[in-house]
Length: 195
Length: 203
Image 1 (spheres, rainbow over the protein chains, first blue to last red):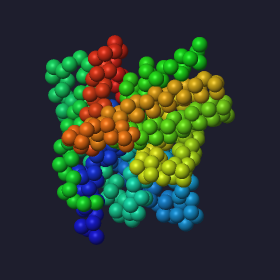
Image 2 (cartoon, rainbow over the protein chains, first blue to last red):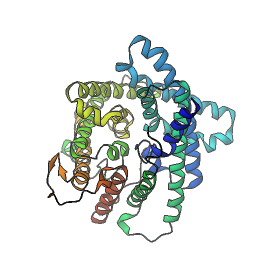
Image 3 (cartoon, chains in turn blue, orange):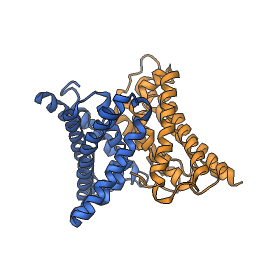
Image 4 (cartoon, rainbow over the protein chains, first blue to last red):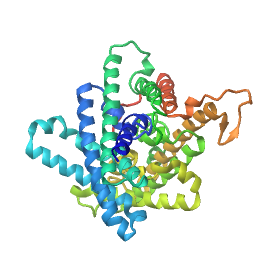
């Protein structure tokens, strides 16, 4: 059981990294990776939402959609709404309880609603028929994998800023090429465990 | 004249992929073969077209505060339709595109166009805008798919075009190939054109 959870965790963090091998959450990965501390906050906020939404969507799927046989028709609509309202609720909660936390994490929350990694995670957990514990670990691992990728990316981009690169390659071009090389590095993890 | 302008802008000046960097996840994920890119483009264009029309029809009925959830429900409905349609008539493509069909819901091209265009314009212009953007997205994905398929598999749309002595560059159909191909294409496009690709607008 524990070994199973550990494999799911390592699989989500390294082997099938959400950003670099599954292409989920590429938009924030490219958009919010200019500074390391900002990228780190974004990663933590995403991890937090991922873990919670993994639990919320599992409950919806198991206790509402499955018993009534609605999964095929209402899954996308209900998941996306649950995630959007969950994010909104977390934002309100953080805003009321801690000003500091709101300034470091809260401002990223609205961006997370349309982050496809969150919905992708929920749908993947259903496809893989994970139980609640497995879904939670999968969500946590995916979030940490996302944080890892975006922080490494931001670290590299801070250095790229001072590098002399061709005019046409500046901005999006060099970012994508860097991501490509990072992705090759993460390819090295494939085969670490078989999923 | 305005109609023509709304149509043409999506093809190049405001091309969602090459100029606006929107919808990066499906762009990178499903373009490992030309046919997948084409299918994804058409599915997205269908959802965009239908959502743009419906939103521009009901825009006065939706209170401002809850417009985003309302738009998301409209979009998710058409995504479900596209998903079931593909599963019924094109099961092979449905299997390859897999997770990325439901993820059209959170594709920021669609919410972006609905929010910034359809909610402010009439039905005709919204439909034309959606067609332009949809075609722009589709050709971009298809072109990426063609390039990656030529190098990675030596074929275009499944038809072999390279000689048998050609060594397949497998990296092109693996995840890194997606980033590298798009990066090099943006490099070429930005070197040739005066305006630069804008940094990601949506996240």
